[in-house]
Image 1 (cartoon, rainbow, N blue to C red):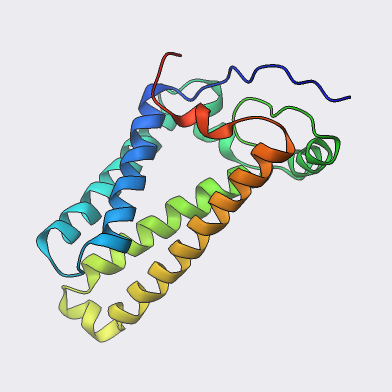
Image 2: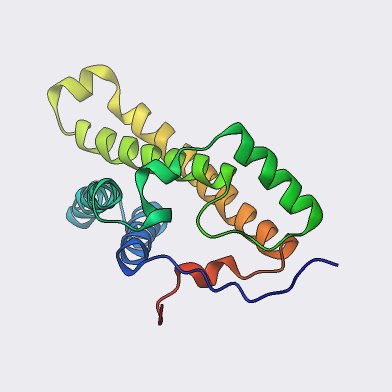
Length: 172
């Protein structure tokens, strides 16, 4: 029978603030705000700053699991993740293999979305079709968000652990 121990791991406060800041910026810009408005642009700039802060934090002062070096997936980790899900083992601290891939895919897609949004307002961007690139990035980002949420729910259910709690505010 798999262990049902309490999942005590939580992300550090800066990681949580950046995560929820990115969620806020993306949610407002994707589903509530009109493209081209000042708030839309400001949130695009803010999300780039937030990811920059997270990258800087991961390269400098972050703890073991939040360091950038800890976010490079390996084939071994992907195999271990498959076995952990199959055997319903409790999740390990940090991200598992596919979670690490998701982090990079989401960060890069958010940055590409923000960059192509900025590029739309330049003469070069007009010539390069930045509008179409931006729209494609938006659709890709929405797909990755849906996949992220589905994987989070599936993994939480399969490993009998509330993975969302790791990212919520509260005591460490």
